[in-house]
Image 1 (tube, rainbow, N blue to C red):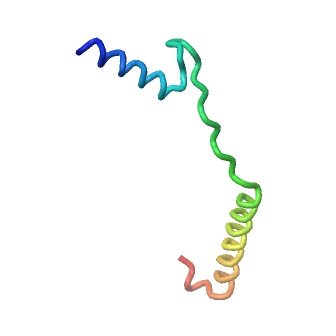
Image 2 (image 1 turned 120 degrees about the vertical axis):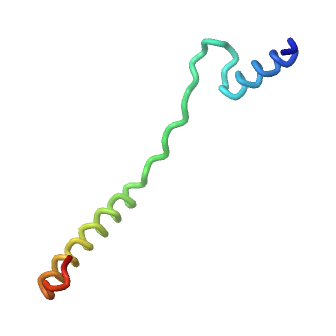
Image 3 (image 1 turned 30 degrees about the vertical axis):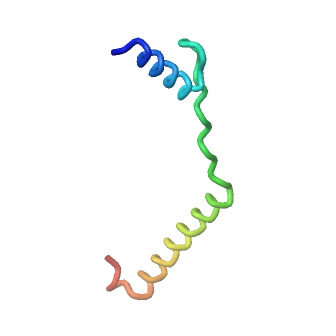
Length: 65
């Protein structure tokens, strides 16, 4: 490997890691938070689906699988 290519690769890796020093810590991006309303909506839809299934099974037990 050419010496210049090695330096270019090292500099590119450091730039990608957002670090100028070899042993400097790299901060990871925080995971995006799920909005509270989304969790509430999911919980509501799941519970209503379960209620509908129970009601349908009570109305026509022959169709329940």
